Every structure is written in C-alpha cells, then in structure tokens.
View 1 (tube, rainbow, N blue to C red):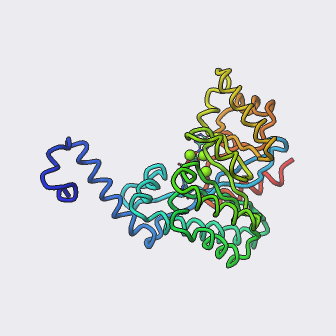
View 2 (cartoon, rainbow, N blue to C red; view 1 turned 90 degrees about the vertical axis):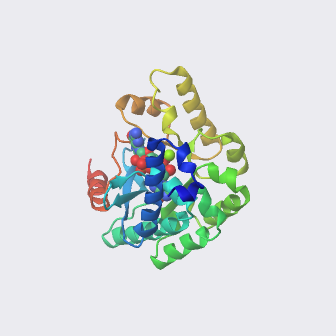
View 3 (spheres, protein in one colour; view 1 turned 30 degrees about the horizontal axis):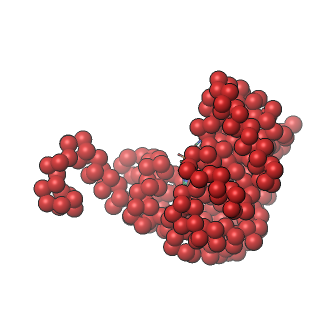
Length: 280
Ligand code: C2E
Ligand code: MG
Ligand code: MG
Ligand code: MG
C-alpha cells in the first residue's frame, strides 16, 4: 500500500491515518465490484405539501449495503465514487432503478413523482441527459414525473455543461431542483442566471429556527425571493412540530424530514404513500 503513496511515505502517516487510508483504499476497490454485485439500493423519502399535508413526491436516496461493513453512508462513498471515476456508473444505476421503480408503482396503480440526486461529475462526462431520456422512454415514464436535484458544486465545476444539461432536461418537462441551497459560495449568482423549478433550503438553516431570529429572517427571505422567481420551495430536514409551525407561517411549499417520514425501502414507502393518500 505504501508504494501507492510514494516510497517510504508511510513513515509520515500516523497509524490512525494509515488505517484510514487503507480502509479508503479498500472501500474504493469494494466500490468497483459493488455495482456488479448488486449491493446498491434506493430508499425513498417523501416530500409533503405544507398546505394539504399530502405527499407530493419522494426523493431517491442511494444506499450501499457492504457485505462486511453493513450500510455505508452516501456522504462517505459518493465522494469516493467521484474521485475514482465510478460516479457515472453508479449514477446510471440510480437513473435506471428510479425509472424502473416508477414503472413498477404505476403498474400497481400509483403515480409517484421521484427526484434523483446527481453529482457535478456526472455533468462533466456528458451523457447524463441521454441516460435520463433513455430510461424514461424505456420504462414509459412521463418526464413530468421525474425531477433532478443538483448542488451548486455543479455550477462551480462545470457551469457550461450544467447549464446546457438543465436546459435540455427542462425542455422535456423534467423539473430541476437546487439542493442544499445557501451552503455554497455563489448561491445567488446562479439562481439569477439559471432557470430552475425547485429550491431546497439546506437543513442547516432550519435547525435553530425557533431560537434564531437571524435564521428565521434568512429562511423567510429565501421563501419570498423564490416565489417571486417562480420557484417552489422545499424545506429539508424537518424534525419537529415547532419547525413545521414556523414554516407554515412563512408560506413554504413542501416539507421533507424525519418528522414526516424517514427514507424507506420501496415496499415501505409504497405502504406509507397509500396510507397517506387515502387517509382523511
Ligand atoms: P441530500 O440530497 O441533501 O439528501 C438529504 C439527506 O438528509 C439524506 O441523507 C436524508 O436521509 C437526510 N435527512 C432527511 N431528513 C432528515 C432529517 O429530518 N434530519 C436529518 N438529520 N437528516 C435528514 P443521506 O440519504 O445520507 O444522503 C446524504 C447525501 O448523499 C444526499 O444529500 C446527497 O447529496 C447524497 N446522495 C444520496 N443519494 C445520492 C445519489 O443517488 N446520487 C448522488 N450523486 N448523491 C446522492
Ligand atoms: Mg437531494
Ligand atoms: Mg439536500
Ligand atoms: Mg445534502
């Protein structure tokens, strides 16, 4: 292993660092085979209308069930997949699986709108838009049923490709959401330059909503501004009733968070969805 980091370089690592590098190295090689071994799964977390309380859609969240280590967080393996140039293959799985699942739910009588997450790196290599169109067509899903969530790192790393991809997706009726809004460096400049559909306010602004007047001011301003720009607003990571009540007063459109539901495997999601759609 030390060879990979230069001769004798292991001397500069503490044993803890060495263990981390080794496990990252090991995880990288495990990631290579994880797709073929079908170790990935999509979980689905509902989004709910603040006005009606009914589900509007869900977000597909990737899960890796490692044969020895159990579930590994996407926060850990997505950056690794990006570094190792595996993100396109993994991203392709997500697109394909989300569309297959939508078709499956349709057969069972439920039209479910699904959002997928995409990484900046997926725009760089060019055929993500074609992958999405192909999957929608193959599974006969109306494009309006799909949305794509991206973070502003995409705008930072490949602004031209990202802009072109967004325009192509939107021209076919696929909705585009900006994820983790407010956490990057140029949040305002890109919502000024890009036509988008949905803005998701990052969880970090919602955690201290009750205590922090500053956070309340920021969140209500983001909501107002979004509405003027014609964007739907989703508040992410809602965990308690207090947050929910404050957001009601701010005219937020949709909510997502553990208070409403956690990310669930497909069968659990479908049961939840059914129950919610048919209650009251
Ligand atoms: P994200 O897209 O911002 O997704 C929201 C994350 O917040 C999810 O974590 C979700 O489980 C979590 N969450 C939802 N509600 C709550 C809440 O009330 N409280 C708290 N504490 N957390 C909540 P998850 O599933 O671990 O995903 C983390 C990130 O990994 C995602 O952030 C997204 O950036 C990335 N990711 C997940 N799936 C994919 C994928 O298929 N492709 C790509 N490129 N990235 C993905
Ligand atoms: Mg997301
Ligand atoms: Mg987010
Ligand atoms: Mg996030």
